[in-house]
Image (cartoon, rainbow over all chains, first blue to last red; front, side, top):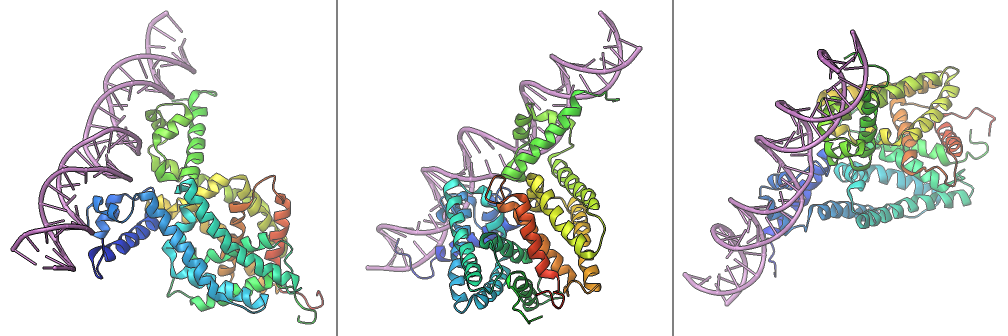
Length: 200
Length: 200
DNA sequence: GTTGGTTTTGAACGGGCGTTCAGATAAATC
DNA sequence: GATTTATCTGAACGCCCGTTCAAAACCAAC
């Protein structure tokens, strides 16, 4: 024990997780072998077990870290009225997910490869995220600003729509990420905001 | 050759595909073995090769059949102005996808397990589907009914939102499928229809 | 430069993989 | 009921899997 700064394992651990993230996202958890991950890191397969007890835990920790990061980052979306918070949520969701395509992909596609206990934990974290949006929609509805009648259904609809950006958006294309954020915010706003009389 | 009505293979072929569909959706293509599929059918693994040349083709044909069915069924969504066709599309998409959760799941999750040529074919079919919605949005925009400025982006947003229903909707829950269709149609309508003056 | 802990290797374990195929079985045809 | 297809079995092929572990290599501390 008593690791010193700069020891090998301080750098190898992250490299293992990064390789696993890349490969799991590219080929799927079940299709990637520990030997492939080891080769990407430049090590023999047995050495991986210094950094994870098994393959399942490696997957689980990638997903859990991603969700925890998501929840932590979202805390900065902040205050204001429901409309402002909704705009913040939309722009944040798009930017955060765009910055982590591999982790997002895994978090959505590999749920079925989690053992029940691990699945439950990830689902709990996801529900916490969804609840934030749900609360924004409820607040806006209570204030008479949003015409949302079913905040749960609406939050699922919004999140699915926003997450879909990751399937088609690529840097350097016709639209910048800001363009996309603007357009999606416009769609979400029209979707939930009940027009005040006289604004048309 | 010269198969007679009622021969064994007339019934075993579909049973193989049904078992593969179920298992691929449940556990993922890479995690399911030919022996598991065979067991579900009640046959030895070798017998499967009377019905498919290999595992990859089995997956591909499941996805292709699903997409072809989708495109065929969508042709019945029909005519009318852009608003009516958009409503038809929304209700159709939700109903069709709800009736085939396993095929939908596979069609979205197993793209990465397709060989390049097979991937290209499935992608082409998917693009044809998306183009239908895109055209509806363009028509509505041209008619001044929709406020859509980017029909491609909007069609992706709508499809992602609608497909998301499959991840949470369950029969026998709080909402009926008709409830869900109504709510989603309301959201899509508000999202794209530019309100006529005086309707507020 | 020896010590003592940390990390890696390389081989092995038992098992499952997709696929093939000769031979057995079943079903349809005459 | 003999013959001809169609279908299935059961074993085998070569290969890869996740994981373990003794022995080797490495490396900071004294």
